[in-house]
Length: 547
Image 1 (cartoon, rainbow, N blue to C red):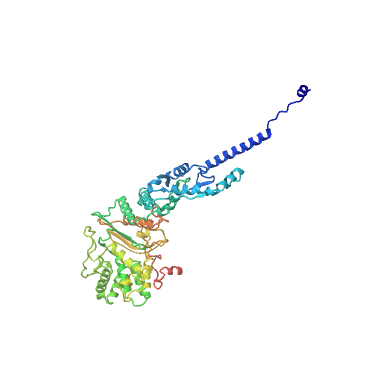
Image 2 (cartoon, helix red, strand yellow; image 1 turned 90 degrees about the vertical axis):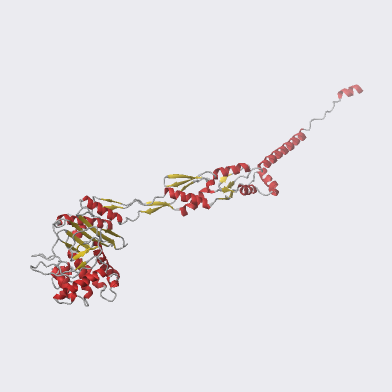
């Protein structure tokens, strides 16, 4: 029984604790994952957080050394400066550019938070709740501004261009302005370069360049043009047998050309300008019809008898006093600055048996290098004529000139305006007038003899650039033909017009000019002399409305 009962009884065996094992394994796995995540998180703490930008450079997740190398590599790259189409390399170290990397890496590292926050951040890391904020750290850098200024000044010296020299076209008698210049705007360039030095991506600057514009065409180029023009016409301006004297003044700037302006010439009828001035000095009232017509005959028709009568009136009214009047005209002309101008005898009338007589000539100092055989009784120079016209112009327009020279009331502005108005009717259509556009206002007085041709006056272009011009041409021949002399003078006048009116140049000589000068009062027809009683000195052409 005992044996049987032992055989019949099954022996119990204990099973494996699978649940416990699984639980243990899960705990160990979780602990391993935790440790792994903790190690990974700890390793990440040595790197910069995500979303960190230093000076515009993305350094997310980089080790500090890597981050510094990254932004220094970007910010120490050369900056390309463009002067027009010319590239210029600026190396940052060349201007003392230095980055304060230590302070920026410290600021970048602190972007990860304080040490006490690590477990909270680790929990966020485990639960996937880490914030993805972006942190921008500004560049901390400096450079030496004086070195940058020196660099820019060197660029300016090398690349800036001054205006070129003006030139002229001998075929059209026009002037070509210079090509203009340009210059670096250093002050405006500095902030642009400063921004580029601090930008890791845009390392290029287009330098601001200012257009200095075309420099003004110096009036000396007009002088060169006139000389070249005369040479092209085989007329030597400073020869022994030919002389050209040219005086031009810009009435806006005061610039002038004085080409043999102090050479003495026979004044011929140009002497009637100082006669007119002195006559007005003696007028105490507005000119009567007789006086106005007398001046018109003297200035417009170059009537010598009218001029002699004016000087007789200046001298006191009797025939014997004409020499006193002649002396006053000369004395006043020299007082006004026309120091090489004089008249010592009455003007020739062409009357058979005329006895002129004379008074002593004053001491003068014209250019002794040229001898034009000037009339010993009647002389002037181009600069003297220019001086007298300038005094009338300043009196008429500014209340100075003749008024300043004679401050005791001998002249009024209106009287000076009347002188210019009267001479604006001298409508020869040749000489100086033939070198400017038709109907352009010019107040002038001409004069010529067998071997000398002269004309002087003021031109009034529409653009307001008024100018004085006086030209005398002499040739050592018995007869210096007007067919040769006048085109020469008209070419000089055209060159001056083109200089002062470049917007409306005369590119070719005028083809509408008469063969000879228009007459002031031709037989059988009306010229430009107003009829007696209709000489309106305030509007010299008013008489034409009544024709």
